[in-house]
Image (tube, rainbow, N blue to C red; front, side):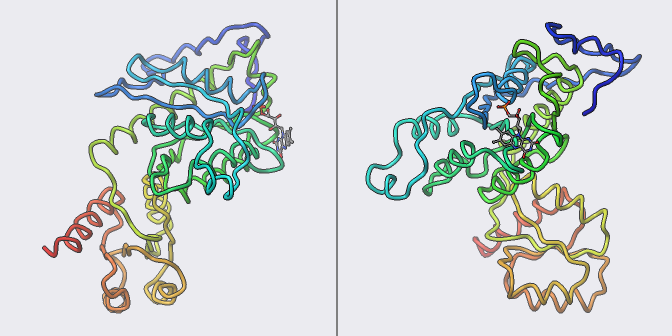
Length: 318
Ligand SMILES: Cc1cc2nc3c(=O)[nH]c(=O)nc-3n(C[C@H](O)[C@H](O)[C@H](O)COP(=O)(O)O)c2cc1C
């Protein structure tokens, strides 16, 4: 996000002031949820003056009353060591963090970029949190924000998204909060850039939407990747984004023959097929897929409902 000429809110010491909205334009805000939502902000930086911790605090200050947020840094966690875990279970600082994550309805990660990736501190915390059958990360709604360097943490956010996908978190896909040049965005530890503030608000709103949706309608469990078969690029992108936000990994291929080739090579948990594909290809794929859940639609909203119904019928036999 580049600086904008004439924006006096970047003057050191200035306080955050939203741009006046144009006539008829509604400024971004987080709609109050139907029941209170509690978020946990986890900063990947251990630095006292961390811009990423400051960014999370700025997000906290923009939330409506029914959305609360604690911000935590990761000081005091030992390095993950399997021997240590086997001998003594989770050390107290790790257990405290696991409890904080379990209590939260959603997590916001504030990630710096170190050497094109996430910090060791953040990766180590996720390694601890990911352990055990009761990992508090499992299917937790989450958002990623970050301040740092020339790319505004784009590379570390991409890596973090991959790590969180492995732990099945439901991560907000867009908008992204990629903040460059921390020195210009913060004054005395406070955010002074209204564009960044608007972006934070938009991401928080999306996260609260995902939390509310998960409460109403928990997504089905799929054991493996969802194989999506469609030659329509735009539909494929929409589907992949929709599934990723619900914690599912997808593999997209253009036609039924490619899909059949992939079946033995990749762990596929369900198949979604474009009903516009030739019927012979669809029939071949259905028989190659044996009893994998199989739905024919490219409408993202229908995919998980259809898979859910398929899973129920698999389990109940109805
Ligand atoms: C060890 C180290 C490696 C870094 N590597 C990168 C990098 O690869 N890309 C980048 O954009 N910034 C890099 N930076 C800059 C940090 O992302 C930037 O200083 C950021 O503000 C640190 O986050 P914090 O203010 O929350 O502590 C690096 C900084 C350090 C200390």
